[in-house]
Image (cartoon, rainbow, N blue to C red; front, side, top):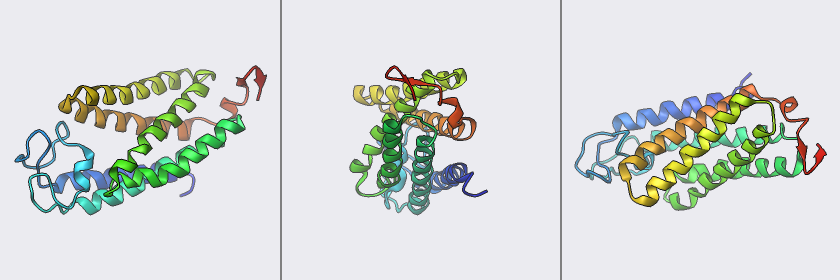
Length: 207
């Protein structure tokens, strides 16, 4: 039972711990260093991982955020590994499996001083979701086609706003793509199966 719902359990625990971290975050953001508390529209999730808040106060919630990110990384890692078992193409299945294993490490690094290295997980997650989207588009899972494309667009929106320097919109879009990707991950994990993809033709042949 635990193994079957490991992705759901990991992500739920992750959300609970991250929310706890936001509730005890002293304050400060890139837009207002003297602000009090955590603002979902102004602060980035990465603000929670430092032992000192941006306003200079000790951050008692960093340990909750750190553990929360650990569960998040495990949840996403298991998801990609499980999805690799549903994909009939061995080549792409191996890629998804690699992304799953790598993400267990790189997503967690986001919460450590190696944050910049951990950002690689965003690229890996995008690659994984893009790969899955290709197979979804070739399947008869029409509702998931919409969900996959919408989720990818939230990621691209985040990068666009970040590149243009719109910090407020970037902070908001960070939460949007995290929530949308988590919902998509849970949907794909529990409402798709190997049979949904078995008839997909790849490179002109039935896999």
